Image (cartoon, rainbow, N blue to C red):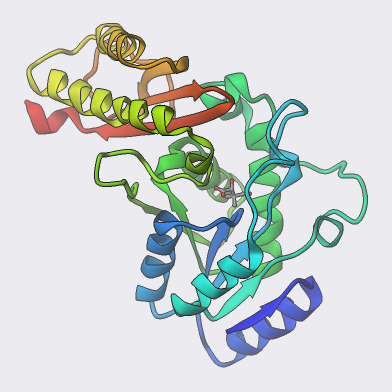
Length: 285
Ligand code: PAF
């Protein structure tokens, strides 16, 4: 595996691979890798492309009161994990390498930045879209892999690629869960054992919502209410949002008649967890 923290060096390595006729697949990450990231890598490898993993904790996507400094980091552990996973190139730039000057050019993602996680994390998706756009320009991938746990992020990137005509295929990868249903996240390490136990209610309540839809419930507000009731009665977490939205563009939904995203964010102490489920109502007609 080749590894570098330098943009110029990475460009040279990639140019060589492109000259050899190889496709490039990018798996962008912020490190502290877990099985969810490994499943992105696995899918990327299955395409036969040269797999590039980037590790960069992007300051631009953290708000002033968010957990940038306490975001977990362990580059050497990550490097050994990606090497064992058969990654071809690891790119781990410093903040100075990515942002040598203060940034004045951003990628704005309009209304997608104002709902769900965007409503409580203003500017977060602008930061994500900007750094991913930079990574796309640096790596010039043919394919890029994003986990569906961050479903809104996946939609933002898909929309950016479409709006800006970037010649990149955005590939979604299913959520990877612990045996008891908790979605894998680098932030799970911050949960106390009690919070970790209670956090099971997130996936359980999403499954229950899907069962409700299966049983004929079509009111988005009623599904949201059921989720809220279950979460607040079974854990000490503070609900940030619980929402049913259109799975294609995150627009508001009243009566569920097309594929919807059921999404939630709950804070356990200072650790904010998100989870979601996409439900195709056609499956239950
Ligand atoms: O999902 C993440 O880890 C980050 O938001 C990403 C896509 C690597 C951009 O910093």
